Length: 280
Image (tube, rainbow, N blue to C red; front, side, top):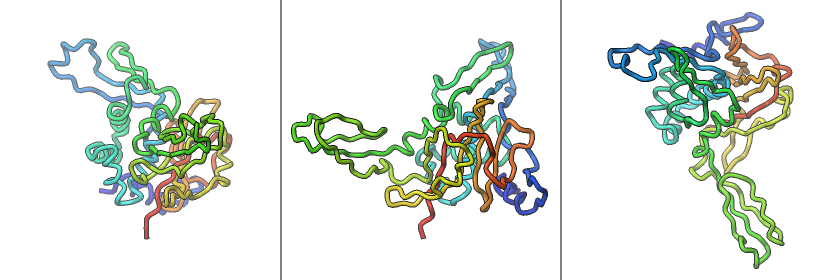
């Protein structure tokens, strides 16, 4: 049986229509998970028999990109297992390949997100989980361990109380009465398989002007995809490369995975995703 990744690649190769869209929806917006309640469930308080997901676009685009990344390099599943856990990676790939899209979203919500990152309430017989918000809060924030970096800085003023400073998260901005020299920022846990750059206010048409590769900590990273933001709809989508072709994923549309001839218009860049180049 072909994986979803193999099916998408085959659709690009074999479909010669103008839009060249994938034959079925992938990771559609929202989702409903029905609980097969047994006798014990009758005594549960509160009682609900289904889970409804809302506003899942804040994780959908990154889940799609994560799936593509895990299939781009045979070593990436093993590497990412060190950060996400082997069981999570295996389960994630299995659920995507079996088109269990609501379940794969619940896997991310319950395994990787903190409860305060989303809203939930019981309405009648349904548990409603609402992911409305910012994709960086709902997804990339949970990758801090994977992409954490450290940088040292040295102040030229010998009397500076913080002459030598280490920073693991953000740019250092210290007033020390002297000049501060920064060392190269390095990854705390070695070069990760992928990195996410938080982009704000860039239009998607500017995608042609962003760097297609980065040199980070003696490793080269290649542009793999991007997440996009529709300001009017407050909605996220994603674009990614597969088989040398760019595709646009938008879980809110009926035809939600199409081949791109040019970047989608009137959208803002939210993130750029780079994968580590294979060493030769």
